[in-house]
View 1 (cartoon, rainbow, N blue to C red):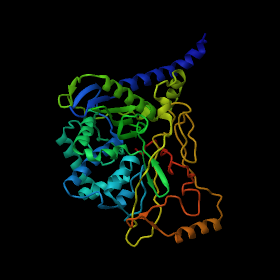
View 2 (cartoon, helix red, strand yellow):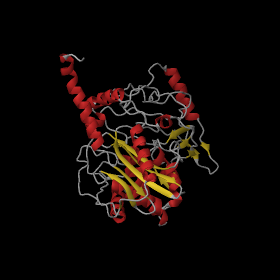
View 3 (cartoon, rainbow, N blue to C red):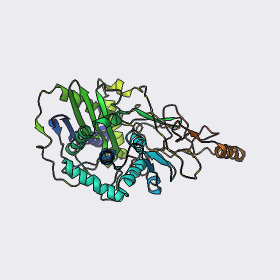
View 4 (cartoon, rainbow, N blue to C red):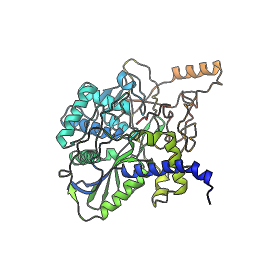
Length: 448
């Protein structure tokens, strides 16, 4: 039997654990919609205002695809990478100012790497400026029936300092997904790409459903401390295609498990409860903020304690944990006019390796550094200080003399492994099937 002093010590921590569990359970919007009919099969807190995080990039994609359909640009149009794009925080591709990428390749980078800098490149190329593009994003949102959504940038990054007025709802994000699939069915494969290859590096999709849940058609994930783990996913079984939106999940694993459960209930249902058009869009203007629950040190300990008390026994867990084979699609960036060809520097916090471990032992390591389960922060990767001056000189000479490689269309291939060195500039080691990634910023801000 538990002693009285121990009961006094344990009670506050147990209360925190149970309180967070109740918060997470009640603040977890989910909606399941039939793409063909617009019927809402299931809806829970579907009109609660929420930070969309990188789900914002689905609207960025819609605006770009609309512009392509209108003839403003094509898939082969070269888009110039600007200084403003380069200044965006991770996740990013990290090109040099003046380099160009095609619209098609930019969209692949946006969906797979969730590249914030590429969102800016697309915005500037379509509308001339980020500000004008955001106006078009909000105009399009109203036009398609997103009744409680405001966009303030094309990538979903948090606005700091606040207030952060960017918000949406599960219902509105379902409207966006259905619109994308109905208006641009020829581009549906874009949302199911499992990986891209640039140079000799492979970048995997963050969406844990792709390649693991058989009927998945893809779509997009998103994460910030304030939003939690979000996903808009689509799946097809027989003649039925469903869209599921999950917001505010506690971890990538729970996000995927929740989506699978919602899909299974949706495919088993024989009728819809209402329609997207009839579902009240809600009127709240300020999103629920999960920053403390997601990134606070106390909350991380509570998650670890809950995981020990109630291990994850979801039937899809093993499949979702598996590292599956991928078929990377090649993407390229051309050198700036008159510029020297240099390696891109993709970076960002990996959704599959957050700064805390939702379940002990389930968090993989960031390249070159292991994340300790339950830790609130991860220190930055350090450069190798043991190199001699002669070694650095030889590496610099090798990099300078490296000749650019062109593909069959004459475009420059970007090699991401620094010449003459097995280490990246930040000291991370190259790991097969991964990219060089930086740890989550020390202030807890998310790259997504």
